[in-house]
Image (cartoon, rainbow, N blue to C red):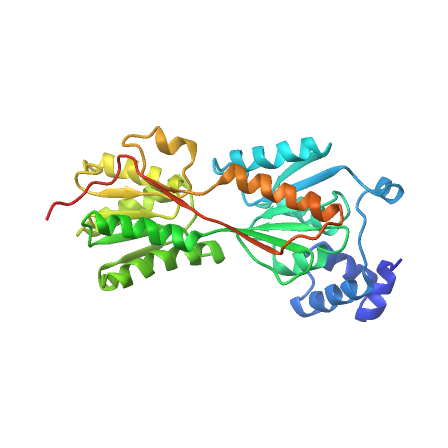
Length: 331
């Protein structure tokens, strides 16, 4: 079995540098880190974080790593994963990859602290995924893809979902449609924006679109960006939000400015979180299967752990959920 000394020798660096690199320490340059990770992969080196793990073949635990556990989107996803894990006699550890929790998340992946992981976190880089995923340690990657034989990707059809949302507004007579989202960070954001643009392009409305992307994908930023949109004047008749959290913040901003939804402006979200049906007006949105995606992720993870063959890519469709926040414009 390869040791850290073997990795250091192959990469031509010190043992301490290897240790820093494997723990994602910023002291190590990207080029040196790449050499070390390449050497670790070639030697099939696997760091062990818990001494007792050396004496057993399984921790009977899987990890879920998400960007921020506080988001309401995650509750159904976690439920789907946990129910499958419990049926297999496994425990589930959930971890955020924001702030100080980032190091814990990386350790779950790079050290043998769990038997496999489900990752929904844009800030876990592909280098860490490639360093970690290998035979005996599968990773299920949500909303992203990776070029690794031991990584299975599950995506939602985000592009089609946003295309569907924009086209629904257009079918209701809207011609000035804005899109409000957070700062573009990954494939998910790109696909949602592309769906919006494609629908406008299809109907010859691309010149009338307004794209606003900045900050986080949360309620507070949806509120702030909607206030900025209102302050600019020439309010569009329809506003698409990157997710329901931002849309709910937008509803608050419109209400504070005496702008009626949907009489003055129509609003549509994405995700169909539980709160979407309880806000007023109830939010028209794009539903993505959260529980089902979590259950499939866990099911595939256990199939891989059992040595069964699985496809490397899966995609879930989305669905338009019509409620009360969109109004038809009579010509």
